[in-house]
Image 1 (cartoon, one colour):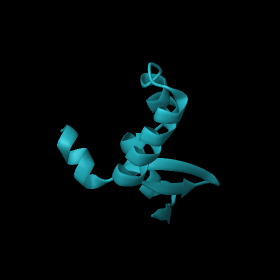
Image 2 (cartoon, helix red, strand yellow):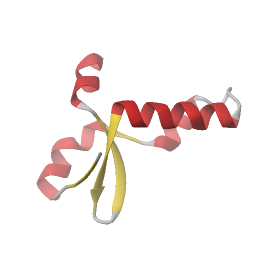
Image 3 (cartoon, helix red, strand yellow):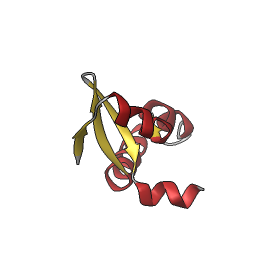
Length: 69
């Protein structure tokens, strides 16, 4: 799901942003194809896309955020 947000909304979700590059770095021990598959699966099941100032961000779904608290 993709959502376009304004300044106020972006400030509220900023702490839930996932950076795919950092997730890929944490999986460096896996083969590239496996990393890409697992990243895609994680993002599609646990995040939604947010567009802010023509940039795409991945934000954790609220249900997932509550698991980490």
